[in-house]
Length: 607
Image 1: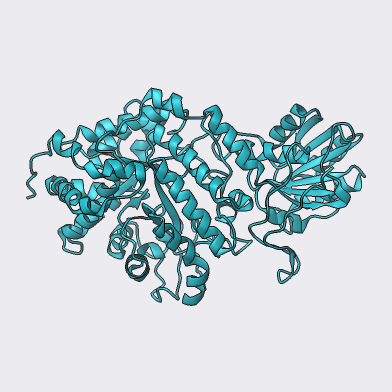
Image 2: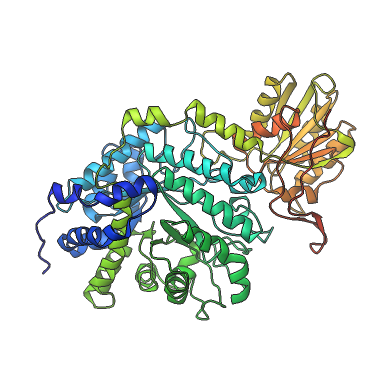
């Protein structure tokens, strides 16, 4: 029987981090105070029951906008998937050390609601016999992966920042993102992506990466780590040991990376080394197989040679290691759901993220300790890292968000202006036949905007065709929007061709154009009308290799409003194009030939 020690006093909790208070501001932990802080944290760990210890290792999703009074549909979803009704019950039953927010789980309606949800979760955690604050996390990469939407500030994503090439802008973007997350109680962000996107066919990373050059990516990763630290938020570089050269999406399968150890050291490792040197607080694992790093062909998330041998011992990293979601197919193909969390801990992981069935995963870890497969000391090692991070972030001193803090920080005019300025420096002009751009309302007043309208990353922006048309109208053009979709039908294409009649120019928003995409037919048919066509790639810049006949092409790298509006300002000559490709665009029919190299980006002749 496990006897519970008395709960730590409020004084113990409040004095856990005298030195960490300064650390939260400076991002630097005083080494002298480290041992003293660890002793205080260890006293909290010693008071935990085994069940509480197991709970600290899990970061779990939960449905609902409120910790105690979610909508009935969310209560039903929680009961079906987790066996609890609310976030407060999740904390009470499973003692989880972390909670992850998703827009699809209805956690992120608006900033004040998010802050109230965070506070409700913290109240539940701090009312427990061993009160330990929860580390609340999310995937706020910006660009195409974004959980907290308007009125929060939305910023350019990684590849856009790669096109901008400015470390100062990357750092500022992360600082703004971090300040707004912290204001709503989210203190761990699963960003920046440290993967080097060397495969144009990569279905899961793409524009989530800063680019294809390892050193350029490394510099931008370090800049963002510093920005998040300045804001008091734990950054998380992902996905170790590097997910940039995969042709399989690890959400649905288990990718294999065939890099040799030397290629890995040259291509994939530099951004992670850079993140560690910058003092990264957490690193996320990848559900990928890298035979050169672990011949057993276990996914990296479950690989001791990769996580302990390389990340801990070779790279010298002693921060928190968090798995990618344990609900993803890539980690579930080889072992059952009850083995995955145990094997992850044995490999060297600290935080177990979002298992498909928390009861299965939680009980599996508990059983592994009781059966002697895992020692309690092994759990304590991970819990100490997790508590160190919570202490560094100041959560033991102040776990709660405030209404005033949300109003003061989230979506301020200054932040929105910075976002516009940063985005403007990222738009890349790839093609401009005979200096067709910039457009002027005097010569090309009437504009038809057609193209893809992918769902908003955050649920709060777009649709892209409307955003582009509105931005053009605001600049004096007469613009109309016609959504033709990612896979336009023959009827839709005919409708677009008919709508182009009498227009001065057609703007087409393209989205991941493949060899067989009907978007190619749409562009070809519009070009055949004789009306000048301009394309803007609203996701991958590689689209230009599959299209022909257009007068100009811009790359915006994402379809959120901030990037689309910046592209329109460039299109209309209100801003000059300054972005430079951070990845090469290869010939679609012969990938050995490069159409546009890294660094390509046209400018406007001064008039």
